[in-house]
Image 1 (cartoon, rainbow, N blue to C red):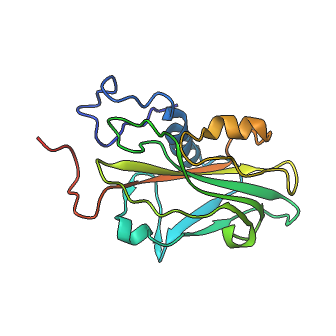
Image 2: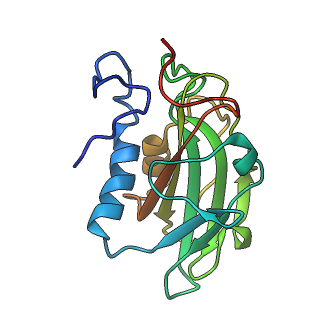
Image 3: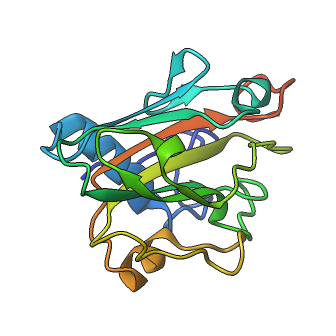
Length: 189
């Protein structure tokens, strides 16, 4: 499985950037896309722009919650959508990692997030320092009304959350990069 390089890392040097906890999220997103696994498909769009792994979006483009379409064949199958920022509050000091931006549960297959239960309301990304990655992860639920809201947004752990609610491995994942509106990419020297 490929390891995702953070956009702020220099020459692929991961040692100076503590991303070991969230490597699995980005790797999962890339692996699912690369292998085109036979899982439920999902599509995330902000206005008319589809989110693809590693694309860059500005805060003004992601101010409103995205449209998330869920594939599948059976309306009796339900999904949970998690959106997190593994780089909060800054990529060089992600002390709030993972910051939970959105949680939608009980999404019926063949529909979209708007048909699910918004358990934690959408909080638009507003990074103030560096380039942040925002990750959408989709899990298949064991049944309806089996997943509940966590008590906090900061220091949320997607892996632990999935384990608590027996969600198993993600069935779909995608991420985008975002920096402050006036940001221009890369590190300042």
